[in-house]
Length: 380
Image 1 (cartoon, helix red, strand yellow):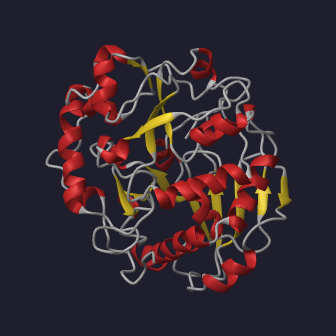
Image 2 (image 1 turned 180 degrees about the vertical axis):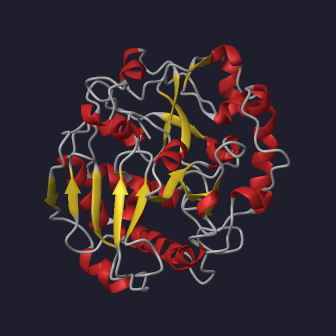
């Protein structure tokens, strides 16, 4: 999501964003009683005593269902940017770790390699494909049926309808260094000359240039922030959703590939809990949203904030834009292998040209699996 850098700079690492010593306190908010009643599958002796989930950002609407799983007696560790509590009434604990600025922008893939305690992580499927040769992971659940990634602008004279419209305009496109950019440029949707990779996660340049640039963002975040929270802008923006033209799966729940076999029994019991929590969260997001607001307010996020309005708007957009929906088979969280193959096909030329080719002969079965999905879980 939007990158809010630590005030002391990115390179100084975790300690710059929080106290070096652990500073833990109980959370007052949360869905503890709901979690204890709804998530009761016995996990003791099957899963690790603490199931560690690494997110790629601060608490936000994308991770609401993960916070939904936390039972009573949840604790916030301000020093390490972690939230820990009972995983429902399953007999094990759940630890949710913030990412992005909290870990000096280390990728989830990199954190998988560095810390064996992490069982599950939130990645984009683009990243899984890009790292399939050297650092393979396998996606086990797709919370988003359509990516919330967007390109947005504020100049009212512009009325882009497609990614190609943006490309033909020649307008500066402010982005990071993402795998999908190679595909969009390689297919002629964007021009290489208009890509500016200096994006630092800030909205300041967008505002300073009066919205005349096109900036990457997430439809569940920046449109609300810019209209309601950024006083220097305080008006709507327009956008094109990447997911309308590009088959990426965003914020998938994945496991390091070499840990898959040893955790097969655990994942068979655990993944359906995440499925149900995601369905429950969409039906009643307020308890988990309240917890995420509390957690964020107690962490040193260098200005990143959540509000009930922002999260509620994100929940509404998840539903109304079809971002959160059942898979093509009617099951929530499943993968469409034809769509995954299309993504591999579109990404491979650009990744190869960039010197980060996917694993040779990569197939959908190597990067995603529905093995652990409960086929009875679906959205109404």
